[in-house]
Image (tube, rainbow, N blue to C red; front, side):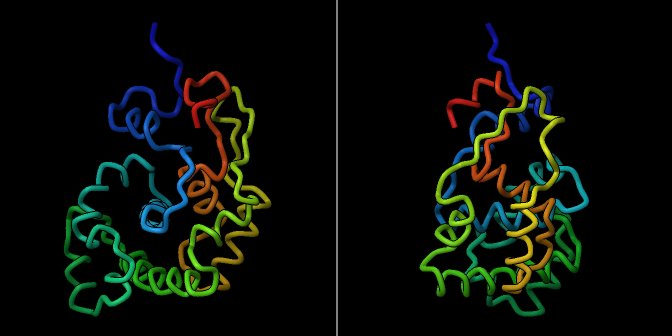
Length: 187
């Protein structure tokens, strides 16, 4: 018997693998959190599957999402990224990636890690929602509004409330798996 999955991922092998293995799993290590943050910022205004299909290209183009390297990018590297057809070539988002890497490291300096900072918003515990249909999950919440505002105050770009909420879902800060999904209790 096939396991029930959240409706949003059905029908695409890449989407289903992401759903089954990553989405909603609590992530607290800084390198992984940075990768999700950058991918979510590139997703702004696009579908997640678009970003997911380009994820490996992003890893290669962005030095495996190494924020220490990205923070040092100069204009020639930025220009080469804008010519890279394997990624999303949005000038504002590419530039935001560099500034977000710098802001990320400032948060690390202040809090000891980005993970400590971001997870403090949920008292280091995943929020477990109870949706029977993924369409009932919100696009943003008061908490994502608060986090978005704080990130922007710290110099982050492309971190509107909707992007932040998607980041929270992806990194397990919030569990929005449908209650009858096999992953609901696993994550």
